[in-house]
Image (cartoon, rainbow, N blue to C red; front, side):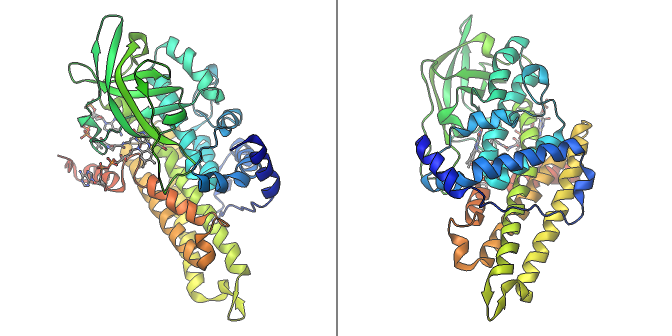
Length: 405
Ligand code: TGC
Ligand code: FAD
């Protein structure tokens, strides 16, 4: 889309986003003044720059590349990482709040930010050398560079341990072969954090840069979900990668899975944002839409839907607030994160489906955000560990029995 078209959309749709966040249990009282201030500024940015354009980009199945720099400017990339590398130096609750505000607009926008912050910058910060941190983190934080995370393969999704992407040691460099699939940000990424096995079958993180010979990123087309996010493959055909691009600080599957803890945590806040937007839209509609001589909000069936939505949203808000506290103390366990990701995506999908019905025919149009949220959430319930996988992680925690093998 041209910058003139973007500017026309911004003018035409300015001020139309009337979102008011539900807070039935005064959970705001549990937030610090700084957290509330950051939330206000991100919400303001979303209303001004994203809400006016997002539906159009989703309808066109186009990634709004111009927002990458903007997201860097508002501090959405790696807000939980230290300031010395150009990041925000904030707590995990603030990180969650930012993800919630972005996904309130669109899961694809949150995807862009959570992949960059939790799946690209976090592994470089946590497992990278000082030289790698200095080279990549400031540019990723500012949005000058976009990154992606390659774990999933065509034949290995829920079971990443089976990956076949591999590299062979050639002295001062390695030669990388294989393919990754379903990779968010891939078609536009400057940098990819790729998980691959060495000759001994041990998983390592490798930083691959656009322009390396034999590295391509074909786009995945025809998605009905996350249409404003770009998804693609990573194909490695004898790519020569300098050894200094291997992350020195971790080996084995715990490397990528540690990053996923951070990203799944962000999703648990984010998906709730989508639910809050659907609820807010449905409440406003129910008060205005007249049928049988009165607002549909006056009918018991519609009140039941709204009451149940608000109840689930409130429970989910408390869940992520507490999880944020545990994350900040370094106490959150992977199973606790799985519970929050699984629960909050599920309630968001249910809220979106109920809200869509409440809008009747209007619910399927792009005049309202609900159908877009609903379709987006079908990806969110699948990526970063499917709904089933998170249930099995919890099941293992409860029983001590591993149902994966
Ligand atoms: P398993 O033998 O259980 O574990 C292997 C090693 O990893 C350790 N580990 C963890 N470490 C940190 N955090 C976690 N959550 C961990 N879970 C396991 C474990 O202790 C072990 O360490 P060590 O030292 O003994 O070697 O592994 P498994 O092969 O049996 O698999 C377990 C399973 C199924 C839970 C895991 O593989 C899994 O989570 N599968 C789901 C895959 C997934 O989530 N893929 C996501 C791809 S990225 C993505 O979707 C991005 S979308 C982004 C967006 O657009 O927003
Ligand atoms: P499969 O693993 O084939 O699962 C198919 C079905 O089988 C699912 O219902 C699953 O729950 C079920 N199943 C699998 N194993 C079991 C079991 N043991 N017990 C019971 N049921 C089981 N990956 C990345 O690496 N980086 C990214 O940036 C990224 N972005 C994505 C963006 C989008 C839009 C999508 C859709 C996916 C993305 N993914 C990414 C991939 C995502 O993580 C995988 O799709 C997901 O992990 C599931 O893998 P799969 O699609 O291969 O499904």
